[in-house]
Length: 123
Image: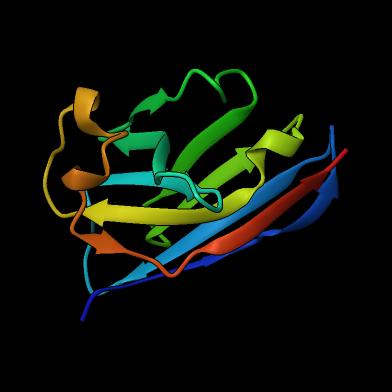
């Protein structure tokens, strides 16, 4: 059974930092991503990781960093210089095989999802 469990969310003031983690079991995914969904909005891709390559949404470039520890089967998202518009539920997603870099920010590319962790940024 595949499980993805996110942690590390919380409430911070604008300009602060958080580090999200996503522990994976039941699969050793080659492709992974972080997505977020604010109330009333579509789920959007934030950052993706495949085979050491990374991609980011324009809104987070230079502020967020995605990384993966294969020994721990865990995905991370370091979020710096947080803004109120970063407030959302953050989800990690995984796929067993190689996902095209151009598809890493598309939710349709991932069959496995975590339950999410809330990030709230106050001004």
